[in-house]
Length: 145
Image (cartoon, rainbow, N blue to C red):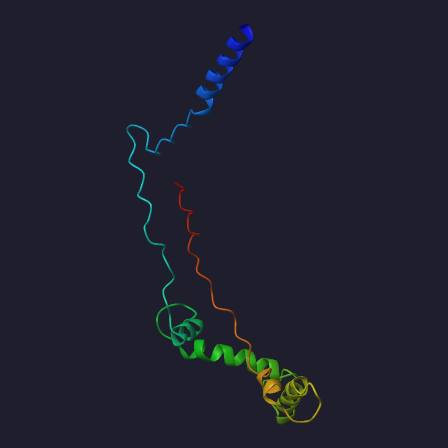
């Protein structure tokens, strides 16, 4: 009899704890006296689309005043010129230009055929910097139901 009573009590105790649901989490609210929490944004902000020419303009407009001065425009040309002017005399001779050009050609001519095929010619393109990524905050994960 005691064994039956003990088994029945165990079943009642087990059913009572097994069917208890976890309480629902309380919504996060601001403490009393404080401003309410801002609403969660419905849409995720995105970067604005800028044309290739707008990006190119911005690269030249170093002081970001909305116009490109002659000095700003020539700055990148001066750097390229300085790389070619190997003896640093301020004058670019044909020999300095020819050395740079033939070196670039030789590097591109991978099969040493003294002619560039389309794939080799593609390697002579000026490398572009990768586009700037959006500095937007990462989207928040949606709360699970």
